[in-house]
Length: 534
Image 1 (tube, one colour):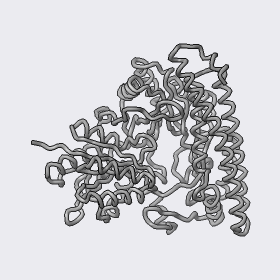
Image 2 (cartoon, rainbow, N blue to C red; image 1 turned 90 degrees about the vertical axis):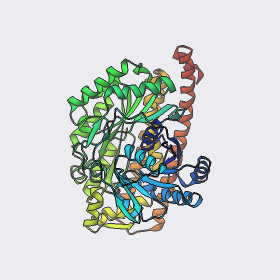
Image 3 (cartoon, helix red, strand yellow; image 1 turned 45 degrees about the vertical axis):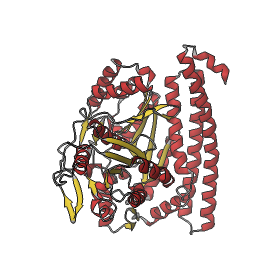
């Protein structure tokens, strides 16, 4: 008789981790018992170890999607192996796909699944629990006296045939609403950005980007909305749209038709990611029609030379046009600027600061293009001997000494360990999305006034950020002074504390408003009554 296994899946889960939840769904569909154990920070370790011991699985699968968390995952695996030395530990994700040899030097990790994981994890589970050979399992690298690399299947699974990701019984609450994440595709049609490993991850495939059918996506949205009352959906596709505006419009319109057969799109809100060259008036109008309230725009750099250095494939005109179109349709557009990269010049810095100032009415962040395993950036800094630090937490030197100094000053002020800015910049993006969602789901004068307050807060915060970026710029031209650096860090942190207090106050008011609106909507009471309660 074929045995069935108990398998624990560990991954970072600030929100539902689709990389392990797709695997869990495939395993459950084949009658294996699975448990998802979230681990996002070191403070989670006691709970993770307790859940693992209580479940007592045959196999442990760990998703290391984020290279920055690799050391944390290595540590929790080591602790698990100390208490359960017989459990087979396999790891997967973008980082292990490229760094499998170094990872398998750790004696507490038994195998690595590279590239797509649904079939390999199922085959590995069934082979281990039934004592079968591992040599025929595709995409598997494992230890057997020596390192064994099996053959690879370089193709995407049929996304429509995969079971929907395994979900918790109760949905998460995010931005005051029942929330979930989902994907409509895998891969990236661009696949050329130097800081990204996605192109390398899919380099052997004939097609670097595949999509679910609109009907399949609509079915999942309707199931989550109707059975779990989810009304906020965040899409984690690297590109929600297509490179062609015509094809993008056709896809969004098809999704709208499929959704209309199952749900009322007035009751849902969508958050997406997109590249600027996919955008025009008709596409954004269609996005608005399916409930889109927020879009994270792949800007990345606001200079011609910076876009070229990062191999973005976008133009400044694309970026400016897309932001303007989203703004005209009242869709909250946000972005990040990788204004530091190996080839950054001071002229590029000036252009990015100008862009931030021009678009200070939008929530955004800034930082450096970081090294991830398998990326062209990793190969470049190695070739140019700019690589610094130790695996897996590599650093690098920027070629221009003045820009390098400016980045280091930013690291000791905006991004110093314990600084509030990295958290606050994300919270500004979140509250910007939240008020856009509130305006759509609960349209009234009160939600409009909330939007005005949020817009004012974002503008004031961005002015504060820009003032201090300019101060970093000024310090770059001076002799280094620990006193000046510490003073600037204190000014930035105290300012961030003030703005975080403002966000918290607004968030509390929004939460009360949303809760009362939902109750009144259930009772079909006119939303004008809400105004009297605040």
